[in-house]
Amino acid sequence: MLNPGYLAATAVTLTLALQAPATLAELQTKTMDYEVNGETYTGYMAWDDEAEHQQPGVLVVHEWWGHNEFAREQAEKLAASGYTAFALDMYGSGKQADHPDTAGEFAREATRDLDQTAERFRKAMELLQNHDSVDPDRIAAQGYCFGGSVVLNMARMGMDLDGVVSYHGSLSSPIQAEAGEISARVQVYTGGADPMVPAEQVAGLVEEMHNAQVDLTLVSFPGVQHSFTNPGADRIAEKFDMPVGYNEDAARRAWQGTLSFYEEIFAE
Image (tube, rainbow, N blue to C red; front, side, top):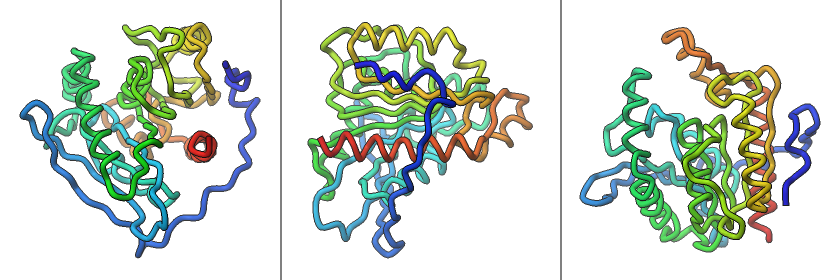
């Protein structure tokens, strides 16, 4: 069912407080190397080892810059909020871009063959599901920029996920959602002033998900640019003259909405 609250951020009031974080002593992290088709990838697991029961798992898919500190920080924030999180690697060990041209090359290679993309994602999901702290039947995924488009495409491909969250990700895709094929609920956060995700993409996603009978919540923040969740976006904008920018209010509201979303879907 299409959520009527997608129309504008101004129509959405999020009043839920952040869940109380776990203490630092309980937070565990581990860098993990794994293989997909003979190639090595490096991910990052974060969890609370004092949790009394198995926790839901959340996959974190990085921006087009690659698996970096920002992605790991998101995994740690999720672990502090009661989830086991795995910041996966879509490019391969050591592949981090320091220039938009390189980032674009990496992103195109990782998504040129969507079956290959799905295989990389699925392997990371299996690692998360097999972690001792995780309830394998409660899994979600969230992604940023490039990663936002990846998690949406994994939902479109029918991956067995409870929900996906896309932050400033591309909303268009060569894959079109079909009724009855998507099990995940979908949440999208986008910037109203993001030229990389124009209004026609937003309208196209709403129509696509409506036709596929997918439970969609879409929030568009007026005047907000691309990469609004990443505090490093302002430095990138200045260095490369790119239309990106951090927005503290939008980032906070998106995070609060995400935690509320997970609390709801994992309680079902």
